[in-house]
Length: 164
Image (cartoon, rainbow, N blue to C red):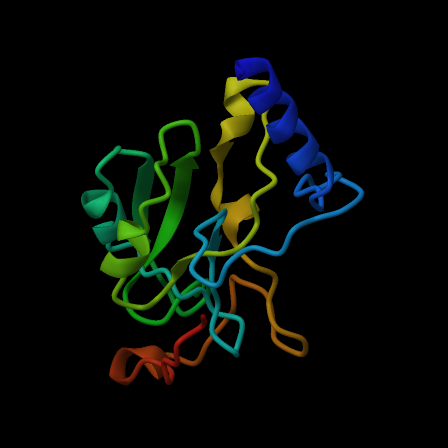
């Protein structure tokens, strides 16, 4: 009796459409709320959104983020305001992709995008630096550091819109 039931189950599943995706030739689209690789966003003028406040590092339950801040000057301006993230590192081996870093960021600088292809052959490769995380400047905008007029960014921060 069990043998007949086993054959019936096998035949039933032979007639169904397979659900296997032939990766990497074929890729399944990710869901809207999927949290993948981190990206550091920029403003439209090319300045970095990250102000080096380290709230993302404080919110990270796994301790995967390291931020070291430095002072902006008019000759070398990386972000609006007084400070910028001189060092920004995320250890992807520790990251649990919870998204608390993005929730804690006051300028929406860190965003978890839909990139899921993360593989490492060395532990050092799993530590993403600021250069790897920072998105390229928008077309027509200058890269950082920028030279600005004295006092230009001490009064107002550029308009902030949601980068997501």
